[in-house]
Image (tube, rainbow, N blue to C red):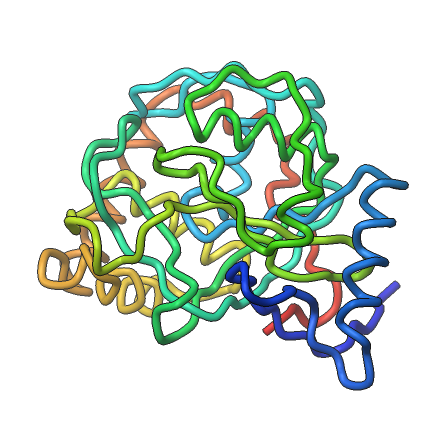
Length: 275
């Protein structure tokens, strides 16, 4: 059965504002209170990702544990290893950039600067609070096992949990009765040394963009090669060729972990998405 969602824009809080879904005729404070109450009652939140976790196959390693093909890290997995209940294509204000050194893939890592110009295609997963907490812990290279306290980020919009790469938690707004969050670095894109990402890492981003937004390879290559850190190091044509080469290499390996999704690799989007 199809359903229709209101057209919603996600606004990112900065600590000076209260983030909330901007819907015509809706009181932002009431939306915030409803989101907090719903999260407390149902224990569910939206995890909005803009990097490699847009690919459900990649996210699966955080959920159930294991080492991705060509990856250097092995993940312990979540306490709750179920697949996300729902998935939505979303677009965020701001821009993705690549910087520093990815421990798992080498090359630059994807970060999100909500204060940059432009927009960022992303994917929202409806998860339990424990799943979201455990995924964030693994991204921060901590042991999973404790639920996050979202009280401060719901009221402030942005909370810096530490100086690490993905230790800044952002409240993006409310979607369909649940609060949405992402995490990034505490600095601006202009304050860090940019670094070119690896082809293997970019393949996960490309897979996620194709799954979530239905983009063809050429559009994906144009987008990724234009992000700071990749721009000037990858041309669209080079990126298309590199993505094809990585895909061929993966097809020659035993990637049984990818097959554990029992064929349901892309949850059906609900409604028309969020912009």
